[in-house]
Amino acid sequence: MKIIFMGTPEFAVPSLKKLSENNYKPIAVVTGLDKKRGRGQKLISTPVKIAANELNIPLIQPLKLNDPAFLKQIKNLNADLACVVAFRILPEELLTIPISGTINLHGSLLPVYRGAAPIQRAIMAGEEETGVTTFFIKKKVDTGNILLQDSLKISENEDFGSVHDRLSKLGGDLLLETVRRIESGKIEERAQDDSLATNAPKITTLDLIINWSNNAKSIHDQVRGLSPFPGVSTKLMNRKIKIFKSEVELNLAGKFSTGEVASVTKDFFTITTGKGGLRILELQREGKNRIKSADFLRGMSVSVGDKLD
Image (cartoon, rainbow, N blue to C red; front, top):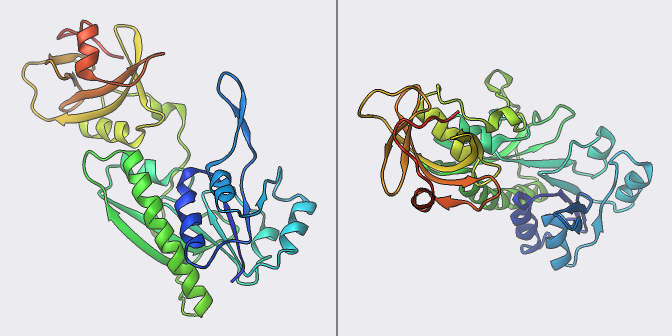
C-alpha cells in the first residue's frame, strides 16, 4: 500500500515510525517549513522532518497546501492512502487525491474534544480518561466517520507531557491497525454523534493565568494541563512565576483570603483558593530555570500571608 504521511510535531513521530517499521513505509512525508528559533535565529526542522530524514523518506514542505504545483506533486505520487497526524487543515481537493481517501489520528475519544488542543483541554477539565481516534477526514474539522478508537486512564497528578507521550505511542499502534484493516477491506465506519461533541480550542493567553478564586482542584488541573509547556503564571510579591507542579490540599488551617500564602514548609508552600489550598511543588521565576519549591524557598523569603495575584 502506497501511503503519504502528513504531520509536523513530536506527537506524530511515533505514528510515522510505527508505519515504517511494519511494511507501510510512506512514499513521501509532508511536513511544515523549517522555522527560525532562538537568539541566533537558527533554522529548525520539524520533528517529523527529522524522523523522515532518519528513515530516508522523501520530504515535501509546501508553503501553501492549495498551491497547484504541490497538488500536482501529490497526484503524481498515485498514493493509495494519506495518513494525517497533527498537521494543518487540508483543502478539500487534497483530501480526495489518494485512492482510499485520507485518514486522521486525533488525540481524543471523538466526538469529545474536537479541535486544536484536545489533550490539554481534557486534563484541564479534570477528565479521568482520554484516548485516540482514527477517522476519515471531512471538510468540517474532526467530524468524519470514526474508524477505530483506544483509550487510557489519566491519573490525578499526571501532566500534559506524560499524557501526550503515552497517547502518541497509543496513536501509533492505532494508526497501524487502521491501515492494516483498510488494506484488507475489514474496516467499519460509524458516524459521530454530534450531540455529544465538545470543543478543544487552541490555548490562549487567558488560559495561562491563574485565578485564585477558582477552587484548588480546577487550578491544579490547569497547572498540569499546561505543564511542562507553556506553564501557568501568577505573581508573588510582584514577581512573575510559572507553576509546573502542584497538589490539592483540601483542609487548610486558619482563615485566609484567596491568593494568600496559607502555610510554608521546607519543601513547599500552600496558596488559599476559592475552595481548599494548592501546594506549589515546582515553579520557575522569570528568566530562571524550573526548580523544586524546596530550592526556591532556600533562596526566597516566602511568608504566611504573602499575596499572589
